[in-house]
Image 1 (cartoon, rainbow, N blue to C red):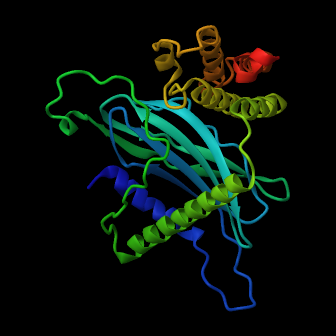
Image 2 (cartoon, rainbow, N blue to C red; image 1 turned 60 degrees about the vertical axis):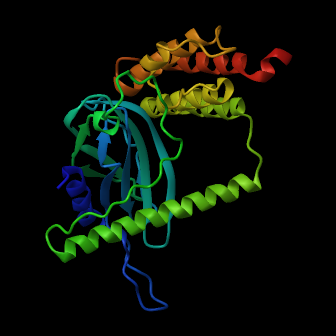
Image 3 (tube, one colour; image 1 turned 90 degrees about the vertical axis):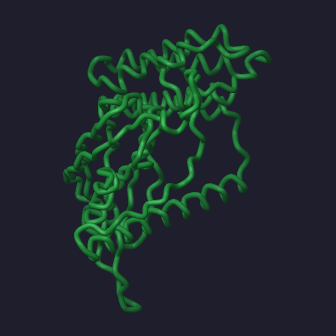
Length: 319
């Protein structure tokens, strides 16, 4: 049995509290207790595959989960980005989620490290929730292409990978299996609802130019860099990568800074490319090695990022 699937199934026990039992009409369900789960998809990885790690924390209403810091490093993987997802709220629980993407770079048996999440109560008290580490297995992709004799070039993952089937065998009896099924159903319903909301918002409002969205994110990062420097650096790096992917048709969202530096600058980006690489490297130092870059240095990096977007935007030639 694959160890990643066993670990995922065991998360069903932790997350069984996500499902609130039905109550008689007219009465209120009891508030959910604090629960956490780490879901890794796909559970079976080949070298070069991108794993999506979703950290889910269920709290009673009006609780706030402090920004989840990704691990400084994960053996055998490159960390690509970290993104907080919209909070799902109802009368008895709030579901807080953070999505982290990591790409496998070595063959072997590895593990996603244990994390500690801090939750603020409405009374400003802080509760800590420990999430256990999870095994990660990376296999060679050689068996997928038995006739290939030449190396692969750089490739980007699909923008929205399809959901993987998670039919895990029963472990520990029917009760454990039912708990896992309950958690899977809750997560999928949340995702379906989120996609429906995103589609409605996209139809209701025009999409702003990529450079305007990037500048707005960078301004927000400047405003929060003293309180959460790692979170500000994460947001700024994601904004720069998204802008350059839209502006110059380069796979900036899926390649690491080291991989981008090995590429030829895309058409029209020659003068901006060195500044982008230098800025991403400075942001990576804050994201993955906290404490080595001070807040003043981060402010300078964010200011340089804003100037880079302003000069690389299509409208720059008219200003």
